[in-house]
Length: 96
Image (cartoon, rainbow, N blue to C red; front, top):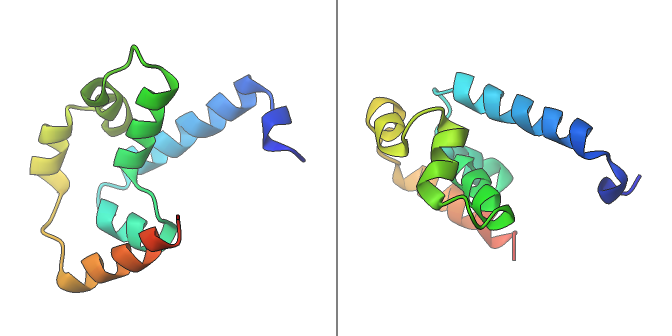
């Protein structure tokens, strides 16, 4: 099936569920998601703002995080280890 053939209502419901899941799993660091999947919450935020130029980056991040990014970062983001950074760099390189 061509993903472009998927109706927007279904795609939107799946996207909202993904965002809800990521909001719930504050224990999972962005660097770990990047290290495995090559994208993270910030990527989703960037994709939202790219899809709607009226949506600035910080507003898009607040939609994905459920709060201002700075607040989420202060409450949930740990310092990345060198191993996490290395995995992320390898994974992100696969995106090119």
